[in-house]
Image (cartoon, rainbow, N blue to C red; front, side, top):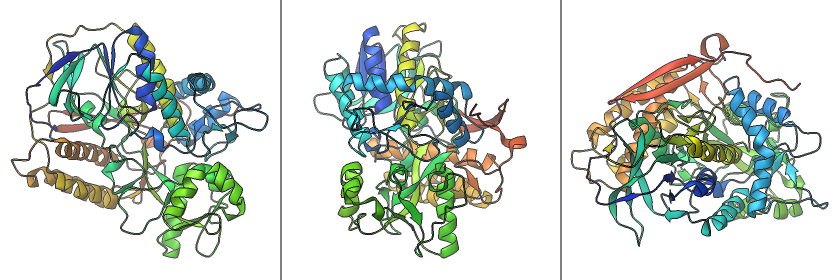
Length: 549
């Protein structure tokens, strides 16, 4: 059972716009900028404009920009990483439009790293057979892209509301999205709960990593967009595929919250994964070794930890030299040194941690969801490009490409008129903020990187019991609403993970250790009907992997 998150206060204020975009990562910023020529745009962000996941992205943006590379090769690598579940048409659209999308960022002022000859510098990450990852500031690509887009936003005429948590979707009498309700906390804005009426609503709210105890995601990544979409009756897909990044800085057994990421690009530049005895344990496990797709490397690390009894593995980049660390990976170097580790002289202790949701709100090739007038892009969406496991550096690219596609769809799609609306919710209550840690512990211990039927069954029972322990008089507020969103998303993830009885990509079932194309080459589509989740299986037709021809 998933209670819808909010009580039903009447909005204390109402304002109108043409398009409301929720989220300030690359997907939200590009959508807002691209929609602005077609009408009024209101961009809403939960915290500060630069507080989303984009600024934490280290590796870069994948695009076939190098001589000898081709979008068809990028397509093949993406399909292989997705383990048979990618939407090939969506991937083809993304990789074909990728080079021009990167050039468009450069035209907006994003400064990518260059070679001595002045060409865009490209590196390789896990799962890629070519150097095709464009980066900025060495290992600060997300920060540079975010800076450039925010600079472009200043003179665009896009209105911005910071410190506003999106609550629920508004619908008109025909069932079309008609805006959202917000809880606004920022100074200079009308406070409390209000309504923004709009002809189109775009979810670009980012990820859901905070559903786990340790994640690379920032504090704001509490699955708000997926929870809203479920309550609005939209279809969500592939929620069982939560990618764990293989190399996150190990800060001890009790580490909680956002953890420091050690970019895959470090391995792309030649660092090695070793155990405490110095053995390169990924050798022979995959043709790409330490640059295998992320699910393969994460499983390799976990298996070696089991074999040796060690709580972490090591990433050895000492041979890269001080100059490479200082110029190519200055952010990672500083973070490691802050925590008492010098990668120039010693290996880095690493473990996998929750990183990226490959699934989300189901969309078509132009970001349309199953609710008319509601669009989604970026990590909150499931465009189909990631399948069961995201290929490295396709995340910023996905947000960039599909944000532009959404802008075209909003321009061309029939639009409703702001008018009477209803709030989509069942009127149930928020949850006690103290339950946040319990939700995270349940998900980490029973539905994390390695899962099993018994643990997932227990997770379902434990999550179902939490609302009854919340108490009848929880004060509505951001913390309570975030916990309710986390609870809704956790429940949906567990439902999908229980249903998929195989191991594929980032979904690793110890009781079903093999991949089964005959039974499970398809998508699990989840909807919320009242307070009851339904999860249906939709098989995928066609070949299981891409071709490099």
